[in-house]
Length: 187
Length: 153
Image 1 (cartoon, chains in turn red, cyan):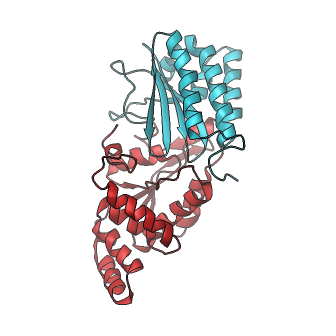
Image 2 (cartoon, helix red, strand yellow):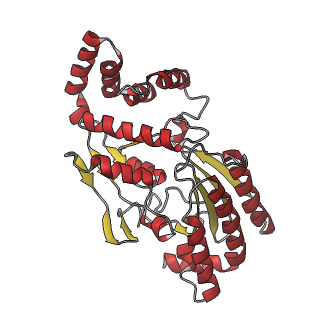
Image 3 (cartoon, chains in turn purple, red):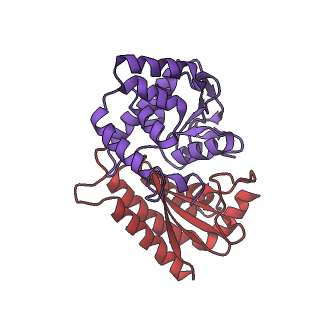
């Protein structure tokens, strides 16, 4: 088990497991609330920025506005780790390790529900965009495509949602339909 | 498209894992090795390490598909990282890409067979992918070390 996996939400010994379980139950109730991902990230990472956005989304107007102000003035647009997007979660995780970025960690979704997984992934990206966070795109998994796979619907969604986002950086190279990738990650 | 990750006949994640572990475990056992199963967020990897090649069945739960990755062991173990190891060396290839290197048309044909089943997604597709991958691995295993070495070079 690697360093990140030692902290995974699937690990019953994880010190934040009770907090995660509570936030998971809460999420089922607040699914429609914009910022639910921040509530989760606040619980998972105790990240000041996410906690502030969570407060903005979940607290009554006055306190929520304070949270929003805190989030806007926090490191959201300055020092927070970039969000990594791309095809194949394992690649995303590996690249995030290399550049100290943030890889989307899906909520436990067992048995896997495609629509729910897609909705959560999309919400995470929209939350990141709202906070001005840098998004780094590592592109398609060309090796999988050469192995017969069509483009991933999850990655298609990520491209669509971020297509006009200003703080977006593309780091992959494309040499053809089935050839390309990120140097140091794919080849 | 996909709904919950369970098929009409009740096959689920645990069943796919068992099937993959059993399929690769049999091949490993025939070669004096063992198969291991490792769960990570969003995927399960069933792997075996032989003296000159390792084989991984990657069960990707988000994409609902199975991939076969191969490479050369490093110090008798599977290298860290993914396609590239932490030292920047290419460490893993998809089995179909390795088979493309063969001069034998029958082996290249197996690469096409793998690609055909890899196109599909879903729990039933994963069952087919596990079974087909195991058949192909068994067939090509004697040739794999040389094909992987060609990629390395």
